[in-house]
Image 1: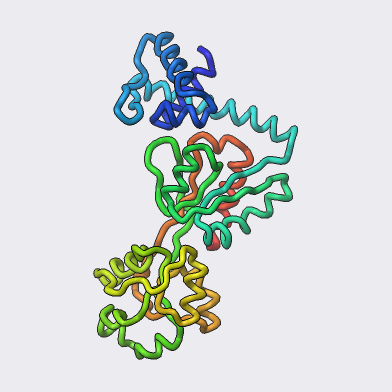
Image 2: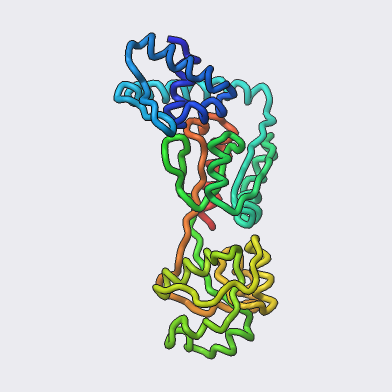
Length: 298
């Protein structure tokens, strides 16, 4: 059986689409369709059911994928390892949210530069956009705040981040000690909100988790970068909800104050994602492992 046909078949099985598999393989969609039909003729069985959106594997298709995929991945690993030995310089294309990628992921990966790795990064505020770019082959590894669905991408939990409700000291002084805990979020209605988007994603998630309600105020300052949100909050623009790793230093310096210390603080999980099978590539596997090691201390 032609290994090229099997490789195309496994990619279609993981992608769930002839079109997406073609993009990842660098082939035309008709070429992928032709290869799958050839393989189906050789086996005498249909491997996929064509749907309005993409394809669904048949029972035979699922069985073949589970048997063939590990061996194909192993062959790729052998070939890439030999290539890696011939040329130590490899480029890793990393995607993720701008703040976390800048402050956590990229510094954690810099030791690999001494081993011949080069880094290229792309920033996205949307987890969906990040994962779509990974699925399309634009990136090798992605960090996202959502777990991808389907078999094309494989995700591993990286770390949890605690969210903190903060404001400048002068706003905290106006509230008075214990006022928020005793009277609830209604006392915050008069405080301006600083956020990354008009929909108030961080504040709304915090309100739902801690107060079981929705924020009453609208955004006074909208800046699509958490670092800008922190600076505006420290300057007195209003309240904000930020991950602790980002505002920890400002809290220690007294530039901002935590308005509440809930018994169970809201958490958000980061995932590190790759296209299924690409951890067979040494430079991606090294970066993946390095991030997981570093995240143990985050």
